[in-house]
Image (tube, rainbow, N blue to C red):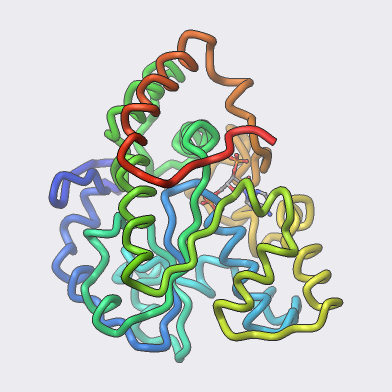
Length: 286
Ligand code: A3P
């Protein structure tokens, strides 16, 4: 339906359909008690969303099974598409939890004006790239990624939807110095899920019992979320899970199965250049 078509807002590649309604997205009215979950695509957004949902419902897993995650927490950018929840974002009761992949400079200004809390989820570039490649292969509304070698180049050039990984993670990292942003890492959560869940609880002002934290960790483990139809997108007709499941591997270091030795060398050189101006650092293997 034209969603594969690309267009740009301030140099950031976005689905054309989104660019067509850009004024509406930009003028989105945030409320002070909105919670925003922001990330570069494929950084572990859904994982974060499910944890937040369970924390807010005191671990009540039945409550979070009411609806697929993308309807419980609508995608801010698609605010006008009923299918993905744009109308829902406007009409849903407070406090709202919303998801976005927008780079920091494209976030509607009302989120800054209202001082909304934001959780940012980041993942190391290599695994993020591999995950995005497989997602573009299986998502019918995303541009065909071409071969892995072609995609590798496209990703490094930042010519993917929602822009360059480098700019995204670095700009959000800088923004946390002047705004309430909890900046989290996929790799840290893989290593110690409970301590990362506690960080989110503290940020949200929630104090849950240890056994509830245990339950949340269990219910948001890869294995459980992969089987849960409310988090695995198995009912999403726009995804072809036969090509690659949404809940694909859920590990750190899968890039080693995809990168050639030459690509790794090229990537590392590029990475060093692009990360020279930031204090942000990532772990790429556990
Ligand atoms: P892989 O493709 O590497 O498996 P997003 O939600 O931002 O689209 O990110 C999807 C990625 O997060 C996928 O990565 C998916 O498997 C992984 N993921 C989702 N839930 C997870 C969980 N509970 N534990 C670990 N990884 C998870």
